[in-house]
Image (cartoon, rainbow, N blue to C red; front, side):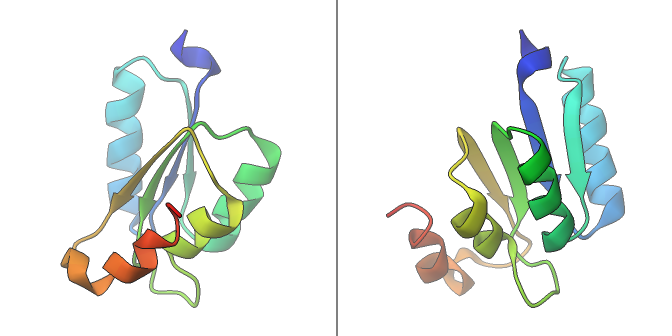
Length: 98
């Protein structure tokens, strides 16, 4: 059942992405794609039907994780991650759900 679900992890912190991938694979999901940049995430989303996107908001790039979801989503489920206070991104996040 879980093998048909494609999960995308978008995080510019390689160790964090690999850690998430490991945990998710241990849960039985084997189609877990990692992107370390906005551009790689777009490429993956064009070649795979992504069901679940786990997205770091701050990618330290011109485009961020919110831009990625806004421009390539919607996905069945989206989980946003950030080490920053939500008030920094709250207005921008709302555009993903309108």
